[in-house]
Image 1 (cartoon, one colour):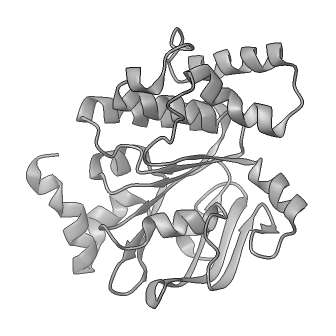
Image 2: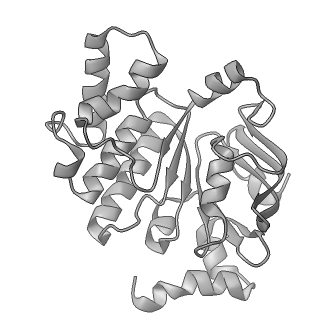
Length: 260
């Protein structure tokens, strides 16, 4: 086990072992290995095109790597049977970059979807859970609103509420702050930290926004497009101060140079 992993308290809940991923003849990831530990906020960073979203898709079973293993709480997503895969997918929630809300459905109906699909709960109980989840993300009173009536930040909050509907052990968030103003982004960062602290939910977040990375991450990995692998791993504050790799220094200095 690496030194920076030993400093993380908790149990590994995700174990990626030597995965490689290709799109047609283009190699995106090569021999990636990492661990995510119980209760941490783990952020995947890097420049555009380095494979961040591909790695997230591998972790959530949306993309099958060409080699390697993807274990979520000891279940290998690549070799698991249909029933085992269904059970493990109930343990995590996913927020896509676009929030992926269904425009023809109200927020309540969007958040209720996972509960209706994966449980046999009474409709009245589902309605109460939906109200609780919307309250969790500060959207009480918007139960009957449609996605088109919401701001970008509110759509992201609604997406988080839907991802949290089944009380997942792990929450995957793809580019949470993309396209949002700094105030809205900071509010989402606080929401994520509050859920993590209050519920112990493990977070895996893809981001290239430096201010958000520094605000929320317990630990990061940085991917590189040319090497197709991990070029930095650990506490982002220590990496920013001590990185010797020019690619890493350039990534952490680019936004700071603009005053962020």
